[in-house]
Length: 195
Image 1 (cartoon, rainbow, N blue to C red):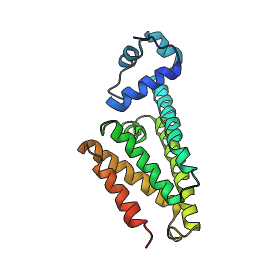
Image 2: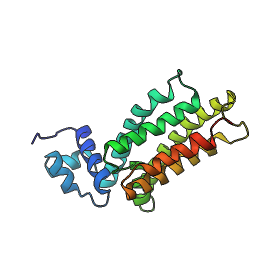
Image 3: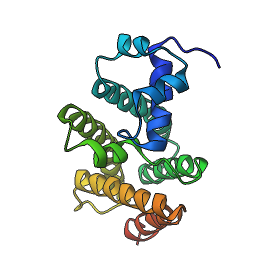
């Protein structure tokens, strides 16, 4: 097994384990074993497991931006189609993981928000950034008369994210992407579809 010596690799290994097992069920020992590093190396990079949690959130968000930014900025698509495609890309990732793991933001939000204020704040920042990205596209869709102008774009963006997270939780329990596909159908083929 290759020995890992840099912070980025430790964060990636830890992120993969936490997505599979949860944060509280992931001990430092498991990360050390998977990364093939001595205990001192972990604490050279992170002063605590909480600091490590912040690092994996940042890595997850950076990966998510890498996935979503090209879709959000693709001007060959109508704004509402970009919103839909962004969620479809996340669903494809979930299906690629055999309908497991889910979204780190939702997972850690349920597991850690009541216990670690710094983690809760970092999760809130990440969710707010996602909301801002979606609401910008929804405002464009309103200006193009693709969706009703009387909807609050930020509220709609928040609701899309919350509904997606709920559908994702249901999909993890069901071990099927059907609830996520229903989310797409309900919002984009019915609720937000042109009349």
